[in-house]
Image (cartoon, rainbow, N blue to C red):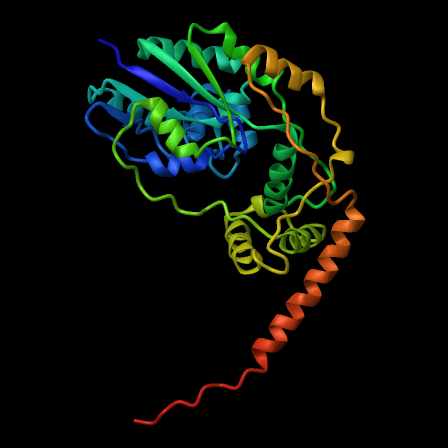
Length: 315
């Protein structure tokens, strides 16, 4: 008998990494986290269902040529089939890239999963638009954004395709409960799961502004693994600079399509209303905050260098 699948699809900025970190390697004899390459199954989905040319274009460091895509695809498929062959009743797959797949690539995904699993439960968390915009802006600054550009959430175009499947859809509001506890409860996991490492470091408003200013003249960190690692160390050093409060974008500069919010309310029965958000309205304000951050950094550096060296005892 074919096993069942719990398919976690995100959406973005709803704690997907926390779920993946907590459940990586989980296997209680009944339920297992699918062993299909990296713990973020988006790599599996991308490699298996996107055209070879698109894989090479999107991730050239992983896929330098067509043969590398084909080889990796075979390896991941064999690994997934081996994991399923262990005979668990239910498997968990977590890949927020499913939220972004176009209908053609998504169709390949439907055929693949329908062939392997008897029953598929989709779990998706939906985040309110203003909260999403603020979280996405900080994340994009951390990965190289150096212009005042806001990423808007997309609901109808991303979610509608799931209604074309035979899968059971379960959309839940993000932010009301602990994301890992809620997902584990839904999946039927009763055992304790692993400690979550804080990889997704949050930053203060001053740190975000300083990084934003640096991005305007620095090379994109995604362009090389070394730059990406260097950026991670920098974020860790400055993340708590200045005020502990995160950078907030003022809702007056957000062009939210509230027809989409209404669609979520009617189609998914999820209320996305949220209180007003006041904060930064322009790049100029961000750069002003960055100047303050630079001054704070100089003070901290100066204070550290002026401290007397401790006297070392002689043996």
